[in-house]
Amino acid sequence: MKPLPTLVLLVSLAGLPAIAQDTPAPAASTATSVEAPSPALEPFVATYEAYNKGELAGNATMKVVHNGGAQWRVDLGIQGNRGFAGILGLNIQQSTVFDDIGGQFRPLTQSTIRKGLFLGKKINGVYDWNTRSARWQGSIKDERSKPIALRDGDMSGLLINLAVIRDARPGARLQYRFVDGGRVRDHIYQVADETETIKVGELSYNAMRVSRVNGGNDETIFWVVNGVPTPVRMLQREDGRDGIDLRLSEYQGIQ
Image (tube, rainbow, N blue to C red; front, top):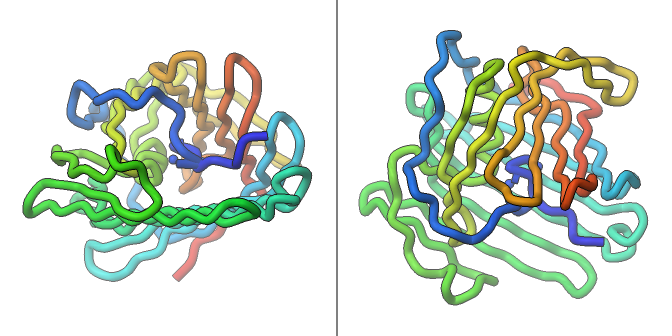
């Protein structure tokens, strides 16, 4: 079993790491324009059940808090407590501090901590918008510790998760530039033309299906519901088979 990643989600539920080739993105981060107003960012905490290949493996928590002014923080924690993930004591914590400027998310710092049996990694990144450069240090390969030139619209994996919620409209095509963990990737998503009914636990939702279309043989799929500040489900498929699957169990606004 692979370690539970961070999806852009999830990634991508972001690393969960985003699934894609490590190749430079050709274009700056953009999203297709939409007519309906984007929902305002609000603090919340959401809890997910985490499955791997159809088997319950643990749980995940996503939280957005307002630090004051334009500054916010988004956190994602994944705890493996069943099966092989439970044996490993797998624990992944990700966090991005960012500014919300007119509804656009600009990352300031990013951190990832992975703990568990035979695991122990910590990575910290800083997005310096004065010099327009981002850089990571810690448990990271040398080639990923080199500075990355920033473009307007660049986001971490966790911020792309929030941006999908902000931008999803039936039929929309969404494009973002992922800059996270010393990597640069182009993320392109297609929102289905029609909503579909999705059952999560005992609840049913009328949801928009948002699929990444440039991930090769691997897929990342979000199901987004109007009025819900976080995806109700985040799924990663590998070669057509379900891999990591986060299913919302509850969410609530926080002060």
